[in-house]
Length: 412
Ligand SMILES: Cc1ncc(COP(=O)(O)O)c(C=O)c1O
Image (cartoon, rainbow, N blue to C red; front, side):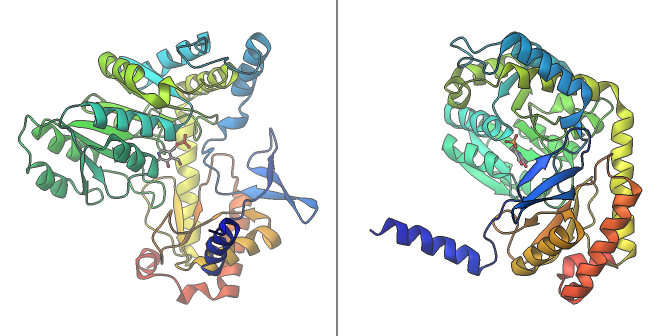
């Protein structure tokens, strides 16, 4: 085989479909978020980042930076091993204790990312619980899908956010069959939120465990910010809560929180936990400071929701087609990969606005979009500039007539 030819051909395919991924080369500026420098054409350009998952700007919070600096000074750069072989630093222990109480659970376990947390926890449960059957929401993130696949247990996919369909699928199995219902709270591409209580009702009726990914909710929902399960008062009905430290917490890493025996089980049998070096102590210290701050500062969550609601209103008033998201995520529908990329390029190059195009396979073909994530640090002037710029781009590319029916409905 001509390997080089094969690789080049596959890349050419992506380019011709308009879904070749080009990274924006950014330098984040401490103290200036959401402003960043964009390296392009041999120069730097100031841009406002409108698509960051550092949803609350905690990546630059003074407490977080101070904690990271102090831990770096005390402990040095790396953790020095896997958790089992010299890589458990006291900051990991403190952070796991904090994440357990944060989530209202007995215990928590850290992973190097949210992706690894999902992949490891779900594959370890699915592979080892005898006769286990997993029920997975059809829009679950790739990390959950991969975890379930690697577990090699029987699997059923239920219709998105549809407890009735879940009930039908679960009904095919006797109560004694071990079952896991895996789903997310906030779905990051449409910004919709799962009916947690209804899903718990169904799972409990069939004696199934529940596995909830709170990656796009942690820090932002609930009185202390642990997620939608806290907001909806159903944390004790969720068997395993999974989350990330890389989005609203502003650092990197992932976790699960659950009963002591469940966490101990994943700790003891999960390859993605056992065989990988632990996160640097400074990262754990930074995440710890961030979680502590967020638990004590609900006003940041209020401000975040206000900013998202204001941005949605301003865009809708100008006829920019957004999906009717009930969360902080604002999907602006374009419905065509090439146009989506073109719109994003114009926004970046001419208006200093960075919004990454979201294309297949992240979203289905025909639903390509620009996904806006306002933070508490996006001020009114930035928002006015965003709306004006979107209007200009929509007119220039004649996108008003292009958007799909779903988005058109939202704009009515
Ligand atoms: C729903 C969901 N789960 C898990 C992950 C993985 O988290 P992390 O970025 O910490 O690896 C992501 C990442 O975007 C996600 O969207």
